[in-house]
Length: 121
Image (cartoon, rainbow, N blue to C red; front, side, top):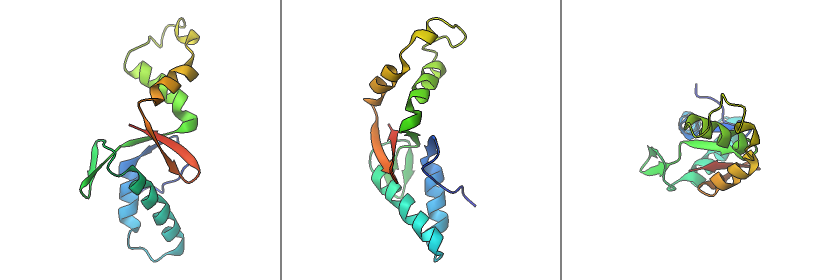
């Protein structure tokens, strides 16, 4: 059984969303119908905007980052790309991560999942 998809996660892998949709695509269960419709809308909203995942003839972004998590995501990305030395206290503790996240978001697009904004590239 694929993971249930909710808009409470900081990071959503669209491949999990697609797997869950395929699992409940033909459902008759009332609760699953609601979930299916919500995740189908998310998939449709991401359809054709590029990315690394191909499904049913279109391309999709793989990673969706919750708006409230984007600052932490920006910092983690900078560390992962070795743009800062995360073992050094200075200057890492002086960086305005709010501003860094806003500037990084300029390269991202947004999608709504329920009433929550997620960012993708």
